[in-house]
Image 1: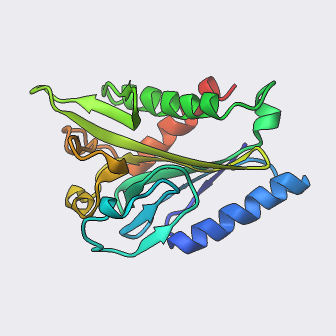
Image 2: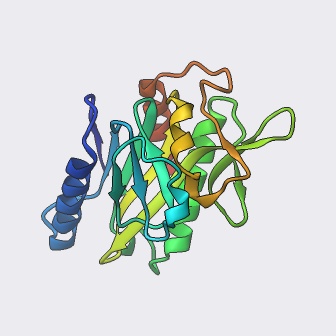
Length: 207
């Protein structure tokens, strides 16, 4: 698995094109799998299940992404990890649900290294934390697409984004819970520190 890291902020359409190029290369056998770590400029992306009501205010550009899920926000301070791998080579029987579970587990193990307990919630996509007052807030999003059993898109962990930017959407169609970040939880972690943990935990999940 090749690890790619973009130091500069990457335009969303550019990212989509590069993912398509990599997936085509994997399918043809000319390229191997990759995990791409990057940040986007402030934007909203709409998945295949996105509803009009999910976009409250188009403060930033809105893109149709082709991934599963509803509306989500991307912006500086959020670590996006796009995973492009051939599930036929990773699993005896290709299984998208198992793949999503492993993405969740990857996030949970990464957060644990920063003493944050990330949890799954039935019927709610993403990873959640429970605050001291009992509030549940989303700290990481998951959105995937699979083509020829090769994965695109991936995860987004809120390290230190401007959380007010999430106010323009109903994140993933869930209005009754908020969003949070490592910074909002009192953890001063750099993107580079998060990257190091993501790389370290990957192999134990995607065996």
